[in-house]
Length: 364
Image 1: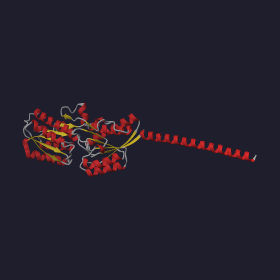
Image 2 (image 1 turned 135 degrees about the vertical axis):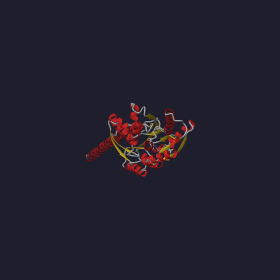
Image 3 (image 1 turned 180 degrees about the vertical axis):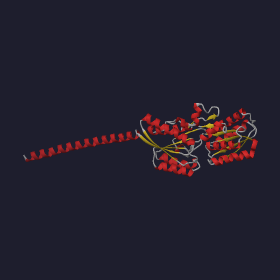
Image 4 (image 1 turned 180 degrees about the horizontal axis):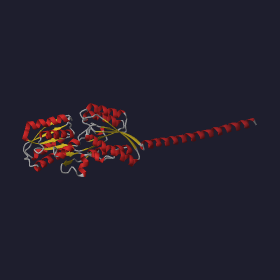
């Protein structure tokens, strides 16, 4: 009898223990499923992130051209928030002027240290920017460039240092400026013999074709001599002084002046106005600001070759957001180009050209 009772107790314990074992296995399985669900939820939360921090590292916060780019970005922020139901914390950092290249690099490095989701920038010093841009990309930060990037349009050597680049081909700017210069000389009845001066901000391989192609176009289609470029380091005072010296040196031989950025265009306009020779020379600037626009109105500039600063800025931010949302760059080409336009005294009041000259008209 005792053996029977003992056997029954043992058997009951075995059954009980077996039951506990099954219960633990079920709990373990349930926990694994819960963990899997949590993992997927965490992934979804990351993918469907509703807030992004984006920093615009400008190479000049005072320059109207880069402010026009920023207007495009800020409009894109509003459109992307409305379209995707997200919020974007957009901030701007950078030096006051393009000449402060060391401050620009520090601003870029500080932006990386703040670990934003994306950085948009334009650089006057690509050699110094490539390594820190690649560092940001390696950290998972989306880095887009607008207008001035890390390499020339035909290069892919530094493709791993950035996500996307929107720009205008510098050679196209130079070619168009050359074409317009000859057309304007004909329209003004100025013989295509003499000298044309050139002015620019600084030496930048990506932008040098603005000068080289202009000179090549003029010399291939006329007997005009084009002087070597003078560089003003983005100083308006230096740009004006350079052109005043050219006017004094060459006198009536000087029939044209070309400045390949807005500061150079400003200097040309002021020098020509002070010399009182606006009817004797054809003057062309590149990119626009209030000084150039006023000069175009009063004839001390005959034409401004404009890039779509607003469009470049807008596209750069839009792409950054879409890259973050999709987890990959939606563009089929890493470099996208936008054609330049020639705005003259005659067409500057037309809606299309007015907005290109002054993108603040598009501000939301």
